[in-house]
Each structure stands twice: as structure tokens, then as C-alpha cells.
Length: 300
Image 1 (cartoon, helix red, strand yellow):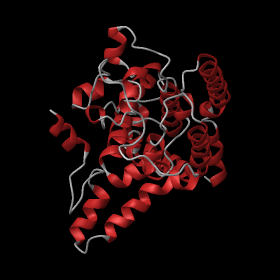
Image 2 (image 1 turned 90 degrees about the vertical axis):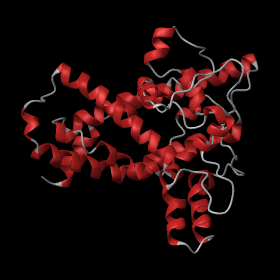
Image 3 (image 1 turned 45 degrees about the vertical axis):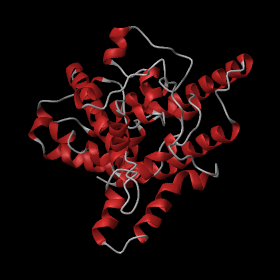
Image 4 (image 1 turned 90 degrees about the horizontal axis):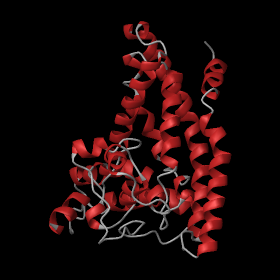
């Protein structure tokens, strides 16, 4: 099979492309409502940076996505389970759950491994929570993202199935980026990721740091100990524990890579260099430990 075959197959995963105009319309409606009600949900420079990250992500993701599709295709070819999984309705249901389980660990590792965090942090550098922030995707994370999904084609799910379900998951996550939706019925809040849960995820408050990583289901966070409820007595403060100093698109996309390089050069110890790359953000060889788990532990 030649490259054109794989390009044509990847092009069939078009949900995100079709959804983009809808996303933009919803952003405009929220922006209009924000101005009408004087809610202060949008900040011009912050929003412009979000749209730049959307553009950067589309560019950076193109090659890794194609390579991942090719890898998924050939992994699916070698598994005997491909005779069992043939796009049945239950197979899509099972894949939907397994995809979200995979997303949870991908997302969690983006917060707990600094090199991965450098690729994810543009999404969290937004200081406002709105639908525009949903479009502010992590740029560098697109390079390593698909490695987390490599196990799924070995279970018999074909490449296009996986990409389609990944798109549905991403589509769901758009609506949780808002302050306009309050808490939903308890049963829904217990099972699913909601705007309330995701406001916690985007907050820089110590009690909320590195919590609520689920995409569609919040039960993964409840199971694996990373869940935090949005408390009425503590409103989420969005952005980073140390906010970026510039909204220039290049700075937004690369500032944490620059910070890692600076920290790696600050020590001659090879093991410490590796820790700056692979430990959680906030670790330091000669200063205060500001990793999220340490800060939360000290808060109790």
C-alpha cells in the first residue's frame, strides 16, 4: 500500500473538521453573552493566543497523526483479534471506554512528566475559562500523544475506528470548558466529566492542582485517586502557578521547553538533569519542591 492510501484513510476521520465551524459559532455566542452580561469571561490577548495554538496544533499534528495511523494499521494486521472485532455496535462501545481510559493516562502523564507537560502547558496557560480555551490545545503533546494508543489496535480495533472514537472524545471535551454551566445532577457529576470538574482541572489553586484528568468519564479520577470536587468556598483561579509573561504565540507554545533547558543546564549531575526532564513539574535539585503532590500534601 502506498502513502496515498493512508492519507485517504486518515482523511475519513473528519469529525473534528466538521465540528470546527460549530465550535467557532459557540465561541462567538459565548463571547456575545459575556459582553452583554459583563461577565469578564474573555481577555483579548488570551483568546488570540488560544486561536494561534489551534493553528499550531493542526500543523504539528499532521505528520505524527499520519505515522500513528500507519502504525495502527500494521499493528491491527498482526493481531488475531481483528477477526473478532469488526465494527460491531458493542465494539464501538467497548472502544469508547478503552479510549477514554487511555486518554486519562495520557492526560495524567502530561501533568506528571515534565517533558510531556511542556507540550501540554499551552492549554493550561489560559487565564480565562471559556470555549475559546477549549481550542487552545497543547502543541508539543501532539508528538508523543499517539504512543499511548498503540495498544488498542492489538486488541482488534482498526485504525479508523480508533481515530473516530478519539475525535468523539475530543468533541465531548469542548463543552466542559465554560463557567456558564453550574453543577449538574449528582448522578451525572459522579460518572461524567463536567464543566465543574474541568474548572478544577484548569485551576492553579493548590487543592485543585493535577486533578480531574478524565476526558468523558470522571470515574477514572475517582478510581485512581486524582479526583477533586469544585468547592463552593474556593473559586478556581485559572492559569499556571506562575503565569506566562508573554502572549506571543511562540512563547506560549515553547516557554516550558525553554525552562527545562535552563534547568538542565543548572546542574552538572546527570541524574539531576534527567529528573528535570522526567520528574513532575516543580522538582528542583537546589530549591523548594513545588510538585503538585507535595504542595497538596503540605496543604492538608
